[in-house]
Image (cartoon, rainbow, N blue to C red; front, side, top):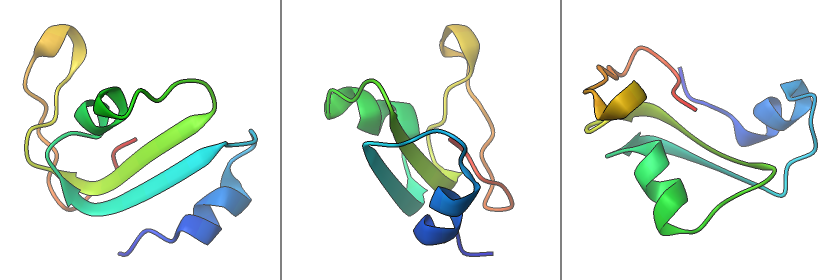
Length: 68
């Protein structure tokens, strides 16, 4: 399933300053941190190749999910 940025904006209850959606990315958090994002911003991906969970633990992010 492809993520639609417009559909997501319709479903999200909070105003967003910026929304970026990737098919595949190393880590949504890495992207957000590298771009100094804060506040009402959202980075999403259909799969991550280097996702991280709490405390830096590896996080499985197969292409069957959506990862904010």
